[in-house]
Image (cartoon, rainbow, N blue to C red):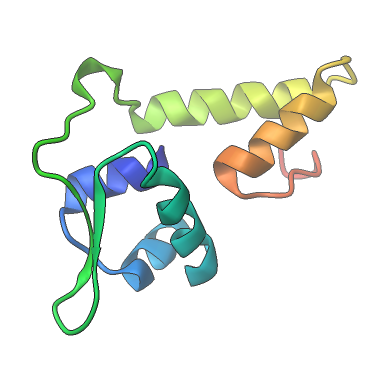
Length: 108
């Protein structure tokens, strides 16, 4: 979601800029873009002046998540992950998938 929000905000940008903005490696950005292209109109352009962009026709409308929404989701997953509940391992897995972090419960 953060990647899609970034593309909506920035328009065309580079993979390097995305990796810096999201704090992940270039390889992660490339993999995520490849995965997202199956579901969203994301276009990549090679060479000078190239980059990545989300189709100008695309809109999340009211389904877009704000930064506060994303933070609340992360907080809720972290809380569940450290709860010891039967779903805590699922929460760990979602934290890794969504936020590309290896949550340990130490920096809550």
